[in-house]
Length: 400
Image (cartoon, rainbow, N blue to C red; front, side, top):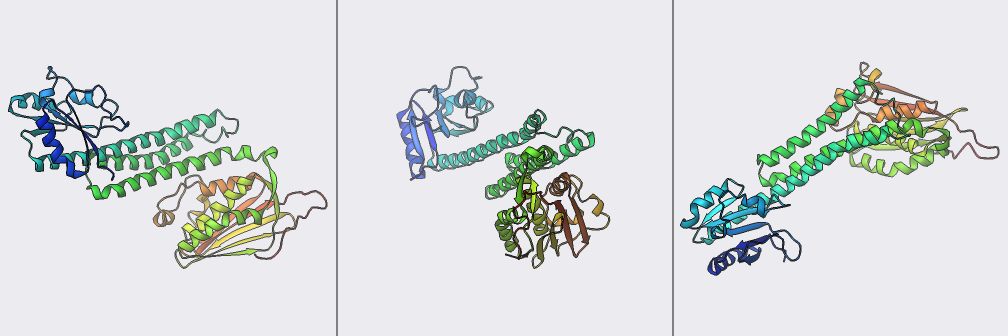
């Protein structure tokens, strides 16, 4: 049976050790005892002690000694509780100021000891989880500076991408929002403003904000490296229908989960000469946006065709649409309409800028027609690949 925690009793008094053990045994704690101050508070199996019950008679001679610090090296969340009788009461009270968690009067009252231990374990559990989240926040906040530094020294990085001061300021703002939210959730946990049953919910909020940050980094990296990846040595001939079929299963699942109808009208399988990842980004971003911003019961249709010189793809939905005022800004970095933010709070505003960069980078065009409250039609064209004689450039016709 799994134990609730590891408790070490430090006392040279065998009767006191026995009284504590007897009171704690029913609680599924692993109880250990020693009659000397150990140099390192760790069990033989390598697991750290959770709670120390220390007889005040074992206190060092110097009252000002930082007892908690000396007993909790490498584990500042370790809980130290003093057991004190009248003769050591004053010294024990002084040590409370040095970080000792609690003071329990002697002789032992089992119910009181049990109550204090249970409260101490609850505090330690929360403190350990908070420390884990704080380390996570530091890692995430450090991620952007590291990523940006690596990209700027890389030949793959579009060094003009982060050059404008206004753009750098916008990037900083976009990072600040989720980081501030993440910090707020951690502070709420730290200050104990929410009951224990709400911790899981708060932790989930923090994880959501961290996911927003990672998505932001991924999208920025895709934008920053797109131009280099378009160089001829990185291109290959791919069939647009084949690439659509690769990303479609997960998108159809998402659409069905939202109560949407997603249909295809595949009239051709045109070849284009591109970086394969770019076609994946193209289909995924356009179809994902249609799914996100179409209400349950709505329809989405994906069409693929060609003319004599270009592949033609379109995604039409019956979603929330875009106002005439917002249409000119829809492909700007970080731009999201008010209606989009109301319907889908989370989003980077970098998906459509990446779509435009990909399509125009290969000599194509992307356009949008939309009516607020009725839906949108995104249409893109890409030049057909020039294939060697004898190779099929028409692809397969007919819907799947």
